[in-house]
Length: 322
Image (tube, rainbow, N blue to C red; front, side, top):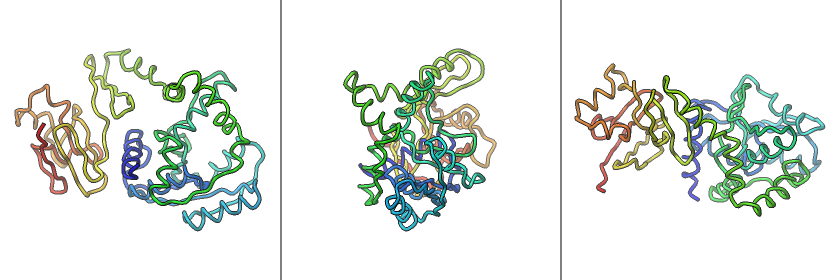
């Protein structure tokens, strides 16, 4: 794994769900494990103003002390103490600190499917982990598998802690005993559970259920389904312009932070100007059939460059022969 590849996927997830403003401030709730260590490092590498907080529950004596020391010395975390009894109580205690600031946790896709299984059994409902809680807790790694965070840490030379008590928790039971049995039933078990958590079929139904207004649905795999009134099409999801990317026939690169590449959307206009991108396409004689796939370089909702048509000083483009 190249660390930059996982960073790009996390940035796409953040932008797709509007979890953190470009260059914004966020507190990582860290345990010292691979997931939260990966989260802390990725957000820093992506240019977010990242700090860390470790909540020490003191449940594992010397091991807890070592976790707290690791988070303080390696991740630069502030360490606070909070004791509780049940898993639910401990979780809410962790979320109770710095409520006035945006907080991020290292929950992954692996945590998502474990949560779906637990809630199905305990309540009969297939609820999953929210990408963004109402109290300002966000999950930038929900599109990443647990194994990938460990691989990332190894590739980036990051040490991390291993919680020896994980096997004694509800999640540990699901992870170590139930999921292996489900894989024996069907190798697609985890992907299907993740799709259930994300509600993909329901979102497609909602997309196609009306011809009024507009709507877009993330399909995963880098694609979105888009409906504008009675017209439906597929387009690539926005991609963070971190270094260089390839979009169709174009190679696009920039060292400037906060830029993304995405497809044209009705109503798009050039940054600092009233002119609509649709009119730019008309003036440049771009066929209507090609406009939906033409890349735009954007900052927020403003279009700063249109490869081959409108240049920007900070953006370099090259048309690549087929």
